[in-house]
Length: 115
Length: 113
Image 1 (cartoon, chains in turn yellow, blue):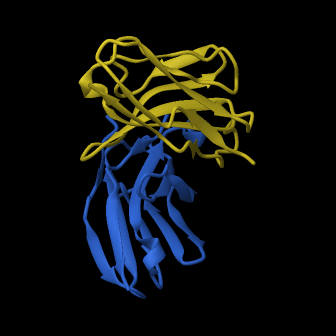
Image 2 (cartoon, helix red, strand yellow):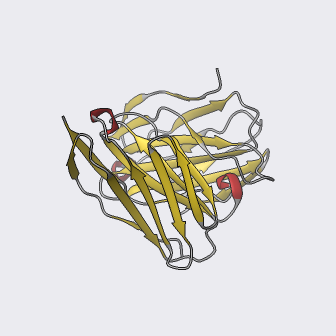
């Protein structure tokens, strides 16, 4: 089954304690992205990656890091989480879009609470 | 600038009604337009995908794009209670959302049985 998986699905942590949210896709997609979703603000892009070792900032990258060492994985790293990073996080992936017909598939989400 | 405006609702309509959902945007570079449906506590799932201006129909759903007006719409015919969800418009400059998708804030739709 084609899917995007995220772990953990729920996480409660404390300010300053480094954490990583993993994202993996089994569709051999080139493109992967991270979004956060907040009430009243909608979905906002944090980082995206167009291929292995190629990453770029989205609209709200501050406080986050990513890496793309393998095609299937795109972890989101919070080096020193703060309460304003409490949010619902989604990972997404899409295929090479030469034909422009592909779009992004979303994972199930990770709900993060930073105390 | 990548602003997308979408009325957050909630929009409440009786079962069987035709629903019209809309988004406006400011960046004329957007070429790819999508509608996602998101149920509570779930990830967004793709409903419709269109390139440039025009109409696209899929079952009870019709997507319209008017690039000259920077306006996109999603119509739902014969609405069902199971259509109750948040509908997100999204758009990108590059295909596949290679530059990332820019989303509207979503419209919360309620279909009353």
